[in-house]
Amino acid sequence: MHAHPGDRIVVRSQTVDGPVRDGEVLTVEHPDGSPPYRVRWSDNGHESLFFPGPDAYIDDGGQHHG
Image (cartoon, rainbow, N blue to C red; front, side, top):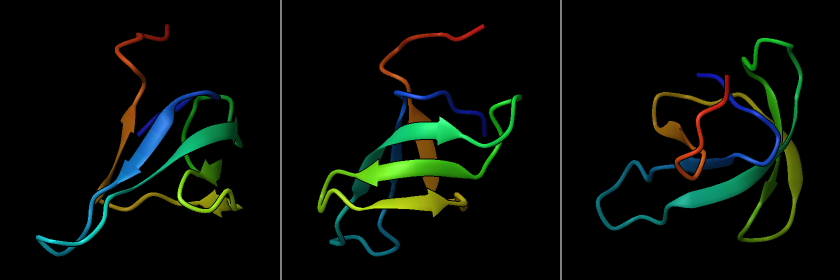
């Protein structure tokens, strides 16, 4: 997974009826865009250092970075 500041990270629920969590990538710790990421979560505004698991993906709004 590779992200850039401004990308949206989405974490799927591990249950069928569970909530989906999303947030904005604020900073990327490594130059190649690999985790961890500083994320501001949309549900509560909290910022955290996030290490994505297999249930997470980047939604960059259709923009291709390169």
